[in-house]
Length: 507
Figure 1: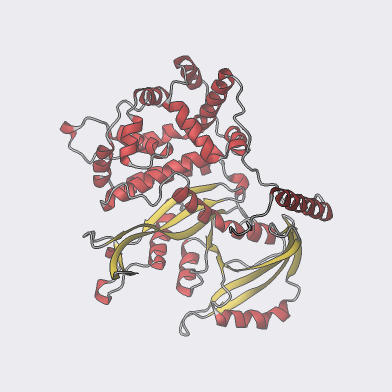
Figure 2: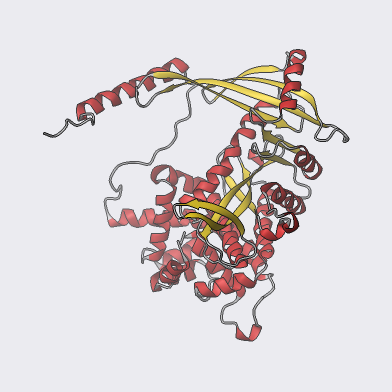
């Protein structure tokens, strides 16, 4: 005899859904319009909205025009920078120019090809390649992915990186991000993540090594770990900047120590300062960085930072915070933000001694305790939620800058973590090697980050954002790629599109 099913019946699911919706309406009514949480756009679950081939044709043309209009505003300058990179190959044996090879690699990442084999198969299709040649006149020929691999193995990644940074510097000079800065400073988040891992010893001297417990016993692993730096804005826009890879060569072989994230951070901070000498920067860091020498390093190179302070970290600082808090009782503020009741309190002028023989480091602490109501999905009840956030600040906390600094700056440090997940899980194949040659792997990584920059800029333009809200980012990018890969775009339409000036208007 079979057991009765534990799955709720259709009527029970309908009743539960009605209870959840009623609870959400009650919560919204009780909170009022000023406290209501912003609605998150969701992808429509309807059938295809196009009724005729003409409607589909117009929608595809609009999608391609919206996406490529953003590219056309930044690609000319980028291609000029790529053309200035010294040719690493023998001039008499060249079949494809270096800018063409790099542009083909960039388009492979823009259209989110999963591997070199897929790129060869897809881009070489006559319709796809013909459309790309018309849309990107600089793409004179189509090199093999293996050609790109050999070029990147010889090319200095710093030259690709310089072209990437020059593009970001141009966007900053033209004030494309001016509305999103925090206290006239550009918020830059830095975080680390694992890129690749492989079992066994492959002989790469730059790969990091570790022991991995498996069913057969301990086994050796080689892996790649990278540190990423991104501009993160409170609108959700995240702009990839720099990457710094940990390598065995940067470690201390005499002491049997490998490279670590804190050492890589110092190298990344120097490069960041070298590229942006006069740009006011606000560094946003996670709980790994409340460290005296690192904070002194940040102040020396960038001046300002906001660092997450874990509960069990820095016991001496916490003791001083608790001792100074009664003397600074006026340093508190109650604020409402995105439907959450926030209670801020802060303590300024905390002396931290990283070494008893050195000068103390003057830091400032701020805490945010917030409460809000939320509808529990399982039970349909309105429940109370709470959270706590604590940061260490390089600048004294003031009441008038508290919201911008904490809510619009420090709270959006998670933008870099979302960015990493997008690159890993949503088409950019962050964890795919593309090449086991160390220099070529870094080159493919740089092209991927540059392609993500182009797509992120396009996604936050007004024309693209309107379509993304309806169909989602992944579906929109698939639509653009599918339209270019099939004979949807007439030569007359492409000529008219190229004759129209491109615009980059961020929301």
